[in-house]
Length: 95
Image 1 (cartoon, rainbow, N blue to C red):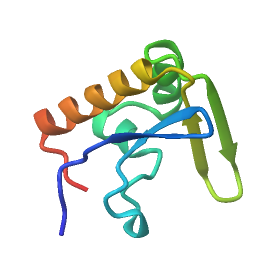
Image 2: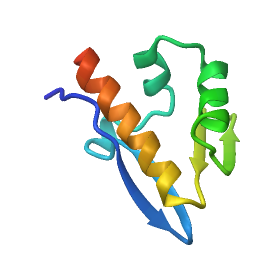
Image 3: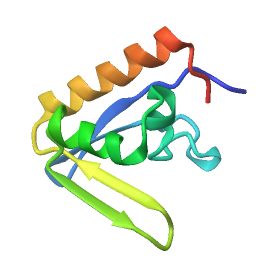
Image 4: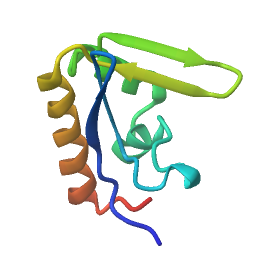
């Protein structure tokens, strides 16, 4: 069953992460989903994360096409989650 994209935050080893963990087996947290929802290029999405939401660390695995990003600061992570959730509701973006 599909649902509106909904990001939550979690902490691990002093770093904060944000994503939709509701159905990981079906790809609910693929890193490119927010870019597609926002209608922007993937490179612009990465710049948005860096410049607007102050992501501290990026790691990309080319073999698996997985981009991980994290924050040292909960406030920036939470602000990102709020932004994604607001946009998903406004656009009625189903995954």
